[in-house]
Image (tube, rainbow, N blue to C red; front, top):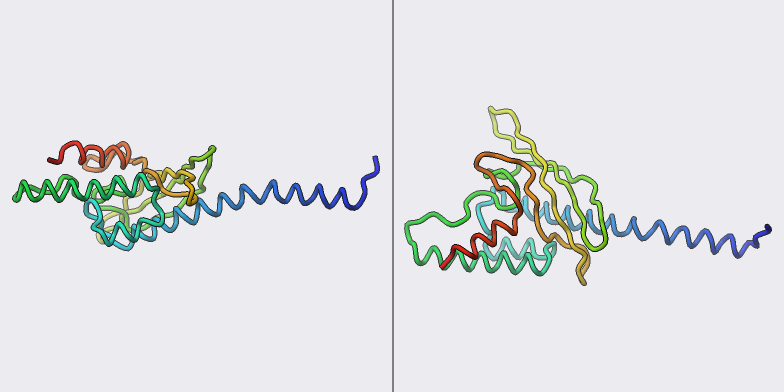
Length: 180
């Protein structure tokens, strides 16, 4: 079989497109996950649901559904605080990682997509002077929205005695259910 120069170039261009799409998606997922982690780090230590300023910093990296849940959760916390003046908030500690005290460092792993969803493992570390560092892995759960890849949930991977378990959205649903 004898291929013309034009058909060879066409075949090579087709292969380039075939490999460029997954690379572009990987780059987009990694960019969103890294942006989210950067915004998360801007209000460390995190304490419960972020205020309006914190949610604004996170918003470019969040799915519309998660962004709305955080806003609804903040409103529920405000209603709870106004009704029960001397009670602690419904959520205390870091909401975006398994550890109550939150992470002091992180390393983003490779994001893996399956259709319109992706999983991005994050190796977290909490270091405190005079104590050995604590490490764990949580997973950012992404969804491909009309605006591109966004963080839609977090799967807590550690089983700390006083930490978060399950998923971030489970914790927010509990707040919405328990608030007046």
